[in-house]
Image (cartoon, rainbow over the protein chains, first blue to last red):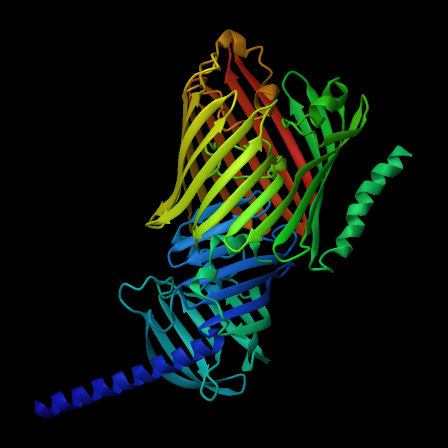
Length: 247
Length: 386
């Protein structure tokens, strides 16, 4: 019995160890891509077999709590801004000078008809704190050896995914592929990262493709034009006043 | 010659597209649209309109912004020909400073330009001062806005959501990241001046605002508005109480309150409900309804104090994008006491990056003495944003 107990403890410890390891890998990868705070300029292309629409935007974020996004193109949406402060979410329409309060559930909605959600853009959930992590395998993606890590939401976590599989490169902590599953464990979309460039001294993918599982001929592609990390913003920057004036 | 000038107006807006954003100190954008209207009550009539909007923003120094927005309209068709005062009505703006001008007002066509924004904005840290014609939007609900005491929104006039600005001086102090104090003095009709103040703050994830105003020769008002959510349902409301000042004998106390909920379901299917109570609303005599020109009834300027003629007003809207390029919606309004309803289907298609095509129907029906009086309007609009 003692032996069984000891071996059980060892297994438990090993699992714990792996879990710790997996958590650290995700934390490092998350930090590398987002920093403590960041400023990003990007183009988002919604691609369908017969048409493409693109949006350009600027975003500022601080941790998981604060985010500000302003659309710079197309002309019809220019100047529209979105502000998130924890559970408070607002949109601003400059043409009619109107601020609209939105419920937090808006975060799970598709963003402007694309395959990504508001949560993807103004990340609310934390990949590190809201999930438990397990290394499942070692696989090669884009010539890089990656750890395949499974993320399962912890109890009471306010997240929109039922499970995430992530492939994180072992030597430079890049999330090169991710699969997002809903509560019923059906695949919703796959993310593929490529075209590694240097932004603010960090080598990270500049292209992120999101392919919906329901139709693989569709995709939303994010191209990062510029990224600055650990910028000097405080939570006070994420204000309704700035929402109206950033451009 | 005149045709050439008109052509130039529209060509200029096209050329300016290319000048867009070359200088960050100066931005230029807007849209040009063509809208065809067909109306039928007793007979069929049409109206065509080229509509062009130009927005200029100049940032000479960091703390200063100069904003000028112009609206040009070229209107022709039977609705112009049949109404001898069409040009006058088109040019009319309910403002003491007249910034609307008819370049040409002919029996069959009108060319009008109107400056609906023209202001200078000074920002010193958390303090902001705006002087000139500006949009002050205090609305919290989506259809009837008792709190929106400066530029009332009209649901029916979907082609002009910008609305004409008020001539005002406005001081805003941002007291926090989601709170502010506003003081406004605006010019009203004749010699009247409206003084108003608003305090907006956020508590328990709710935006709450209290406001008050005084207008000489008119009334006092006090209002309350809020926006928040219960789980995934948004909740919004506004209420205002009006008290006429002693010298105005013919006016009565008035109370208006609107409350609305909206929710976005899976696949962007959304539902919106709104209800408004207006103490000034009344049941129009059925014998009278028959002679009411329904078009007049809902094209007359809507004010925050009188957004609808009925006491009990109900609004329902459902919308759903069929594809990311095609969005559809169906709105229904019911004026309970007058047994009058309004239905409006809407289909909007994104043809290209900055080009959209919309079809909107508006159907009005009211119970008159003998039978219902119906008006059907149909709009087709092609809009290019730049």
